[in-house]
Length: 122
Image 1 (cartoon, one colour):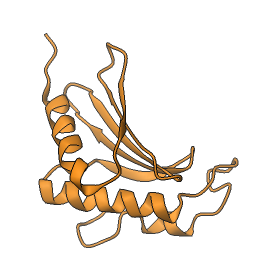
Image 2 (cartoon, helix red, strand yellow):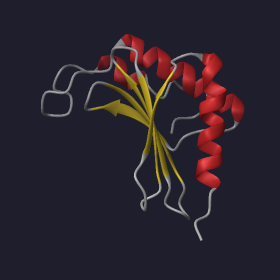
Image 3 (cartoon, one colour):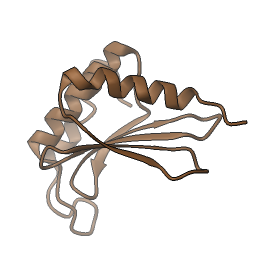
């Protein structure tokens, strides 16, 4: 992750079609804007991700990973403005949800991510 004073998605702004050496679309300005907004909110909430990168399916992906239990939470900001979250623990079907792309709903999403990442399977 970038330092707090840098824009972690700055490099996404300069990508072109095929940036992945195939035919991936670069993240749209809408996807970058929504992802940046989410990252700022996450930073203020103290729930910073481990990674924020362009997505090969068009948009920006933000990843959370728990190194002890192996749990993964992923938030995808698509080029068309849609937002999906995925929470996966390796032993069950992933929990996939459509999210509202606005600051008012980010608190709930970040809370769900925090609770999920702290779960311990018996």
